[in-house]
Length: 189
Image (tube, rainbow, N blue to C red; front, side, top):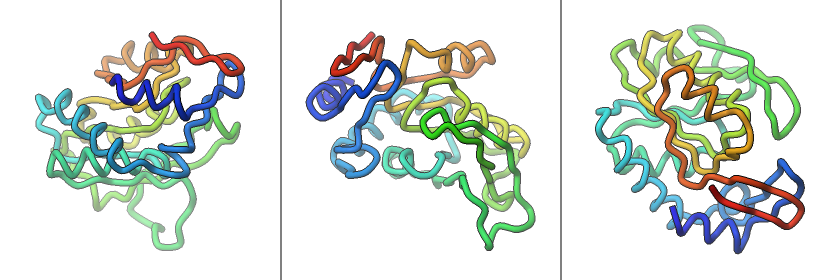
């Protein structure tokens, strides 16, 4: 997505060889028009799968996921990263490792929002090592539902996430694919 790549170059900041800061438009301040356009791209690519639910992991994936869900006219489910006092029973849980934060956490999905007949699309902000996406996949598959695809806003193509997902047969579509990062350097595939 050319507009997203341009925005990354204008407002993104490569802090190191692995860290890209995009808080000006994606994960601190949100550009709703850009999120809407992302939803358009995801809908166009994944429309062939007859998606019934869109899932995302809190919190940075929410904006692009809700715009995609709105355009596909399906519900969106937020996978929770922290224990909630209201989510006690009837949940699916799995442990995932956050590359960005360097910590493990429990990813949680309420059983009442997913059915075995659901055809799901997972939307996330970043793809690096693939751990978050694989955690979401585990929850969906534990529920007996189908993962039809995984939509990523920014993929770090120099890390193994895409290969892990594709090796397991998942259709991965990324709006921007970063080939290389270094201090003040961002190169796309």
